[in-house]
Length: 333
Image (tube, one colour):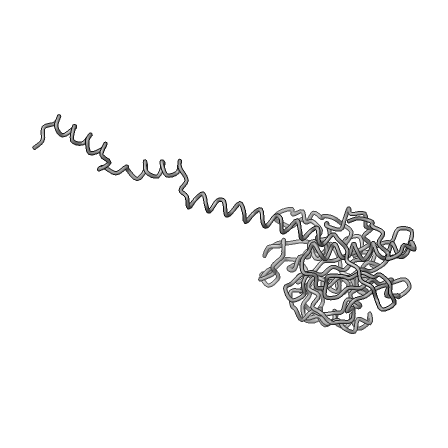
C-alpha cells in the first residue's frame, strides 16, 4: 500500500494531470458560465428571426396603410381594395357608391352575430333575466369569456356577443330563447328573408360554421338595420364593458378598438374571422356634416388590412363628397 504522504502526492498529481474528472455539479456550473458555440448560434438565430418578424410586421402595416387605386372603364380613379369583396352603401338613399364583387355569396364568420342580435331583440326579452351557461355553450367555442356554470344576465350576454364577439355568448342567446337553438336559427333565416337579404343563410348563431354565408351587399344592409336599433347601436359603439357573473367580474374590450379613436365616427360595426371567410369587417360610419355610409370588407388576408381598407374606402367617399378628384381626402391613416 502507498503511504499517506505518497497517496496525497499521487492524488494531487493525477488531479493536475486531469485524470480525475470534475464532479457533475461543478461541470454544469462551469458550462453555464461559458455558453457553447451551439448555444450562441441558437440565440443569434432566435434574435435574427425575431427581427425578421418585426420587420415583416412593420412592412405589412406600411403596405396596408397605403391606399391603392385603379382607373375604371370611365376613366375615374377608384379604390382597388385588397379583399375578396367590398362595398360602400348609402342606406338613406339606397345607393351603392362603390363595390367589388358585392353580390358574391361568401362565408361571413362572426358578422353572423349581427343577425343573432337582431333576432334576439325581436323576441323582446327581459334583459335582466339571469341564465346559466352550460357545457354545450362553451364546448369548442374558440373565443369566449364565459365558463360552464356561470350565471349572467341576458344584457351582459348580448354585450359579450357584440363587443367581444363571444361565441359561447351567441349560443346562450339562441339556446335560452323561445323554442331553443333550432327554432332560433330558423327565425334568423326568416328575419333575413323579411329584410330582403336573399343571399344570407345561417346554420349557427356564432359564425363558427362556414355555412353561414351572405354577400357584401346584404351585409351592408344588415349592419344598417342593426345600427338603427336603439338597443344594439349603443352596445356596438362601446370600447369596453364590465361583465358580472355569479363568480367573478370580467372586463372585455371591443374587437373594433382599432377603428375607435382614429377620427372615424363609428355608428355601428362588427368584426368576423374564420379561415374560410378570411378577415371581415362591417361598419356604419358617419360622414362629417353628411350622411351615413355602410362600409363592408369581406375576405381580407389579415386583420390590419381589413381595418385599413375600411378607412381607405371611407376616406375616398368623404373626398368624393367634398368634390376632391379621386376622393382621396384622408381622415386618418
